[in-house]
Image (cartoon, rainbow, N blue to C red):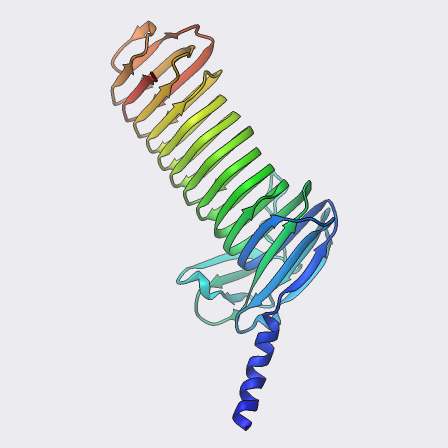
Length: 349
């Protein structure tokens, strides 16, 4: 009997701590902060942003939730009362960041990062506060919401509005989104499908994958990782990678800019454009243009050949490593440069 009572006493608070808690955050601009956990962002139907929070870990009951207006946004902040946090799902890795006393982190005003606050380390093992919070965030259409997470993972589904997702080390997936979407991760892969609007995806280290996007602008940036984009229709397509291959297929865009420090580029254009600029320090470049295409062309490689396949070019300069001329009506502009690698310009049939 005593053993049963002791067991119940130990387990009871943990079970209670794992029951979902529900909060509603009102306001047109909402920010949500959480250091560790799984975050699901989805479409909501109420006037406010609804947050369902489920605590986890041995010390889950020590977490608290703070709300209120901070720096022009209504907020919900999961508070972790320790500088060493253990999140078992992280495995062998660890992440360190600065956290303010109010529970905010990773904020910037578009120009400057605010890295003040205490230094917090999150690891997958060891000593510390073993606690995390899984969140389900339901966003009504038209809201402006910023989601901050240090470690874990984030999924976004069927959201319409102005959404920013900022994570220190986590994979992010998003599908069926409409409006303005900005995803920024220090380390982690980013996957996006079926998006409409203005999109910016940025990861310091990780792969970026896009499948199905239409809108004004698509910006993809990774310090180290491959970029893959398919079925893109945008006024502006900008891809930048420090080290990694770029593959962009079924692209309809007015202005295309691709820059990679080290990596190959494959681009498949379905329509004419105004401007195309491809620059790689080291890597082969292959660009496939549609049957109807017109542009002035300037292609240069320091170490590699230039191949014009089924392309009628009125050349003003024709050398092994530098070609200048005009295709079709010459209204657009194409500039391709690689420090080391071959260039192929192919006309689709």
